[in-house]
Image (tube, rainbow, N blue to C red; front, top):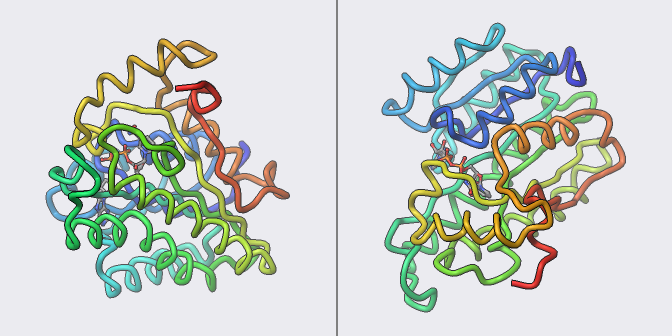
Length: 254
Ligand code: NAD
């Protein structure tokens, strides 16, 4: 029960394959009380169904492109829970056409959308939860190796992940004095809704299995268990880090 008594807000559950759901499951198992958000009415049913497996969940809408949504969502969670101990940011989006072909052809709008939803939203969220993290807290986001190296077809999402990872370091400095820690898990490829937008995704799974030191792909439990460490007091002296949960793949020559 590493998160016993803690209250957390998790953004990014779309369905049972979502990495954010893997984290929610693990956090629930460790005793946390959770609020889950859904992006729009279309996803409400599936998130409510999943939330019914949790204890006293709060389920609310939040589109991270809307300041009003972010304000309302964080205030509602803060007021209901009294405080927020951790936040998981599991949100990303790029238009499908930006995830194929050449990066050099990225449109201005495609760039803005990807960076706004996948990177800026973390900062927008951090600013709003700060006042509710009364006894310190932990913020955790999800990133990918494509923010660090060129991965075929990842394109503008790689640029967004680089901005996200850099934001983690700046946020860690701003929020550190309040004992709020900010970290990112860089997950290996997992078949999810977001991943289905990336061309040649099955190839990425194959390459990791073939070349990673552990010779396997990762799953939601791998991500969930690593997240528990970063959301719990066990990681109390760790902030501003990007940690790989990718069976060791990032260390291999590609
Ligand atoms: P997913 O499709 O299950 O999750 C993406 C989530 O982003 C969805 O819940 C979606 O509703 C949400 N979202 C998109 N636009 C939004 C908006 N405007 N407002 C609010 N929410 C919005 O896919 P996933 O793979 O679980 O993605 C979660 C995170 O993990 C993403 O940051 C992704 O880049 C990252 N990640 C995924 C992989 C992978 O291989 N699946 C690997 C490394 C990192």
